[in-house]
Amino acid sequence: MKKFLFVLRARPHNGAWAQEMLDVILTTAAFDQPVSILLLDDGVFHIKKNQNPEFLGMKDTAAIFKALELYDVNDIFVETESLSERGLNAIDLCIPTESLSQKDISQFMERFDVVFSG
Image 1 (cartoon, rainbow, N blue to C red):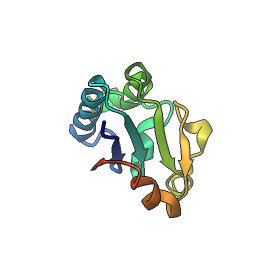
Image 2 (image 1 turned 180 degrees about the horizontal axis):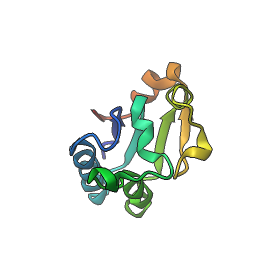
Image 3 (image 1 turned 90 degrees about the vertical axis):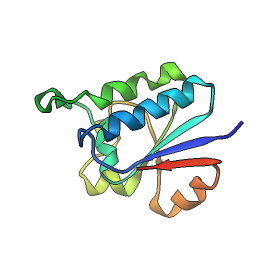
């Protein structure tokens, strides 16, 4: 069985890209594949509390992230530096995550058979 890592770098509510990536994540997980997610750069905003994307006519990606545990997607990682550069910390996030330092990202990614990045 292959291990999948999905790396999200782009900010949420930036067109249909985020929704499409989440659809791929859910589909992969629905086929009982081990899925992990790594949020880097503006991707950390996907799980920021108190989003109101309805004003932009977009879906609330944070709500979708909360539902990931129903698909056994529980391994969600954030880069510590990405959070701090954006003035965020763990209490600003709507789901529990594991933090990784920027220096550990490359080694972390080597643990996976398939890496999708966007």
